[in-house]
Length: 166
Image 1 (cartoon, rainbow, N blue to C red):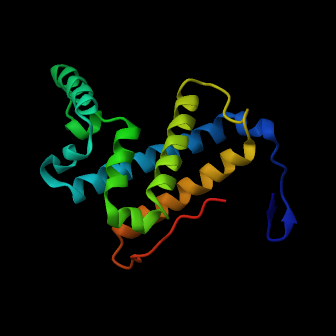
Image 2 (tube, rainbow, N blue to C red):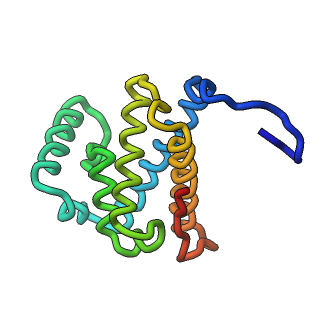
Image 3 (tube, helix red, strand yellow):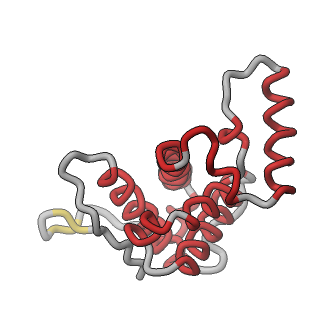
């Protein structure tokens, strides 16, 4: 790693397994998921997003919502959707798709990979077995997605902000 054109440290593949890196990646994913919920709520008031889910997925979320509500949790139905459900709703939003991704397929692929990574992190599994460069690409993609989401709500945010995955 270089800072101001000087070597300040070395990052190895084994460093990617350490808690700070895992927490940083999980934080990126959590922020991305929070942004998706915020965008969905603003784009689809009064739970208008329901039309974009299959009945089975909506029923699953409704069961979880009822269980959590019975436990006195302060939540909305959207809080009971899985990341893949939220991603599917976003993919149906044409203007967001145009803002953040080149195509619906690329958006779905990105969110699928993010969900797999999140699951591996949550279950304390190896996150670099397949490819450490793919992990880096996902982290960069998540950061770019977060920037695009923030530009949606920024008074000076641009209306065209494509994510580039390397």
